[in-house]
Image (tube, rainbow, N blue to C red; front, side, top):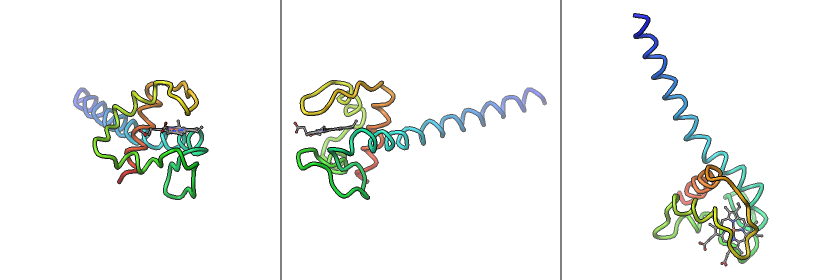
Length: 104
Ligand code: HEC
């Protein structure tokens, strides 16, 4: 009986942790986007405007062939015209998840 309860508890914990991880990623991406990217990009629907050269995140997400995992990798590489954000892999994944949400 005790063992059974233990098993159930750890199942519930796993479910909770998985949910937290999934919810965290896009929400954390939004925080980073508003802090680091909003100066140039329109990162959310409630944002009036970015600069003209930087594509809005909703546009990026709606492109044919958009792939959040490719985007996460791309974000890790420094590229011209954007400052090198020097972000971690999980931060890049959070940002990509957030950008993907903007296409819906
Ligand atoms: C200093 C201004 C600036 C900041 C800050 C900035 N970007 Fe950009 N970004 C640009 C510009 C300009 C382009 C277009 C590059 C080009 O066309 O050569 C771009 C392009 C991109 C693209 C590629 C779009 C495509 O055409 O495929 C992505 C994705 C992107 N930015 C994500 C981000 C994210 C995520 C952040 C925040 C961590 C960020 N950017 C911060 C200016 C900026």
